[in-house]
Image (tube, rainbow, N blue to C red; front, top):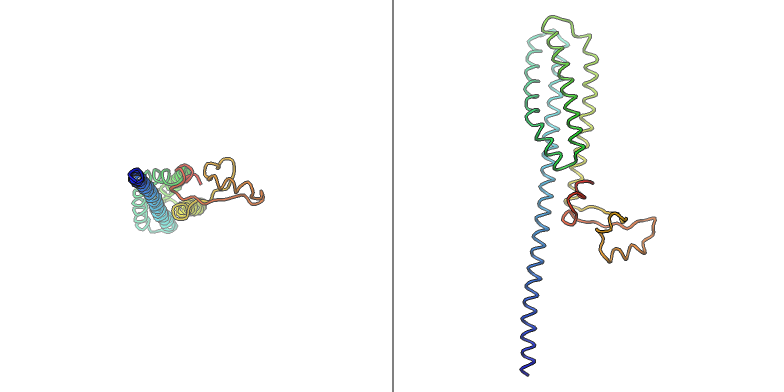
Length: 230
């Protein structure tokens, strides 16, 4: 009888200890997963904020360039001076934030978007320099109308580049949103075996080759390079 009671008591103690350990382990793992998801959500919000800022400021800079070009087509020098000042103001705003844009795009999206932003900046600078030369010619009494056609064509090309860049950053934002809230679909292949559980690998043996096995993994279940590189 005593032996039975001792066995029950020891079993109760062990069950309590093991249960407490498992509970703490589960709570800790749940907390880590929650922090990872919160981190992904912050990355999504930060990337969305960058897209909003770049889109708004690049559109503002391009429009101020247009307004200056329109003024240079006329004869009102004071209007052209006013438009040049407006353009200079937005260029200053853009230059102050460009480094921040580059850092955040690299951190929250992909490096190729930062490269494209630098190419966009190069075009902005070149077209802006042509505009300023045209203004100086206009201010000195020279005729600039006949020389504005090629410049206007370059601005049209710049508008197209802006559209493509902003579109691709938005795609990165939407991809981050999908990964954060809905997970990432992973196709079964040699390079992704580590993302499949034992039972899923067994199922893959009986999956027809025409339709490869796919699983959904949340952001907390994937390493950061995998999530960022998609």
